[in-house]
Length: 186
Image 1 (cartoon, rainbow, N blue to C red):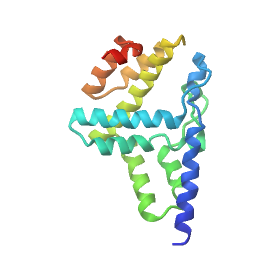
Image 2: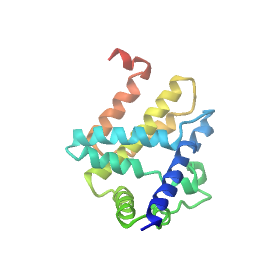
Image 3: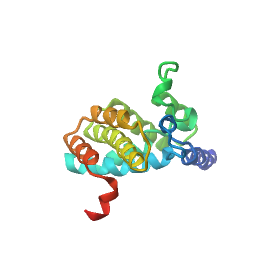
Image 4: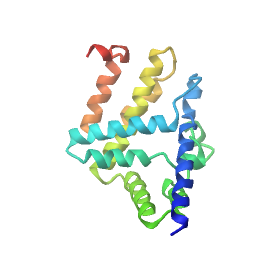
């Protein structure tokens, strides 16, 4: 028991790395200072809650799953898709198991269950969280395009192809036709 607060603190420090790890794939299209994994995860969780609300799922659960979906990148960094031909990405559940091994039982099981549910993609909340991950990337690509970054169309197309919920598909359609510069006018 005396080790439990220390284990939680250590894990908290590890999670803080997500604020400094940049989304590496954007460097390939010329983004000089891409968003961090933490920034991506925050908006993903927010979008997941909205998608779940519209899809009749639990917004709280969908947001919770999205919060944990990239925490493994404290150990691997953000591996861009261009590396997948040369590297095999480890199973996020294995990384999470290692990350959480020293945590108290309740915390360990909470995080592992969230990552497992997200990765299994069997619940409506997991599907909304995964769609939110794709939508966040799509929105980011559109935002970067608006600032002059070229070659983001592949990112947008990839995100759209991976969407499973009807709400996410409709949001993606709106996002690619609506300039983010006009959001204040809505």
